[in-house]
Length: 209
Image 1: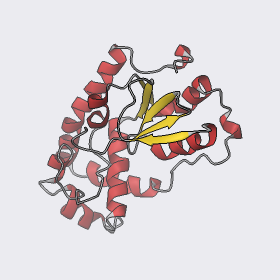
Image 2: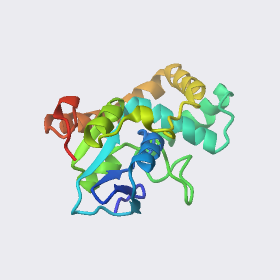
Image 3: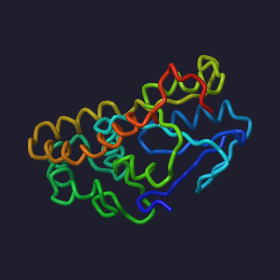
Image 4: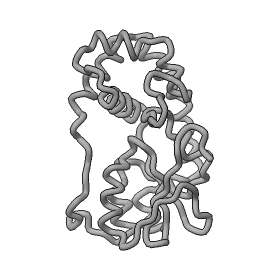
């Protein structure tokens, strides 16, 4: 059991399973899998008999995306930069909430979309990791799919203007920016270790599933 987030696996044709990590391309990945898999199952625990994979993202980019999503979901006026900075991002509990079950966005039944990715994958012993920018090549190499023919694939780009606002707030406050970078350092380290242990898929690996 994952202490921080609910674990969700998407099983494709009883051949392999994808561990969903929020704000790491999961909307797009689910839409592609729904098109190319004739049988989709959703599990809340890993099937040890099937290979597993997941998609990870640059930690800073994902943090900005997650904060933006949660601000919008909780109906904060994200265009009011001073209010968002003062009430949310500069609150003394915000940085703590990155590694905590508590915080400004943690309420009953709600998912915090910016906690580190390793809280998803470290307890799960995932077999293969794919960087978000390589996910299309991974699909084409491992699932024999021509993504140009997948009709309903969805990429969520509607939050770009809001992300820029959040990022500008962070960059305008040096102490907040430094604190975020410090807290992300372990996540970058965890991803570096995946590379060092040859756990991150590269295009020249070809088919691994």
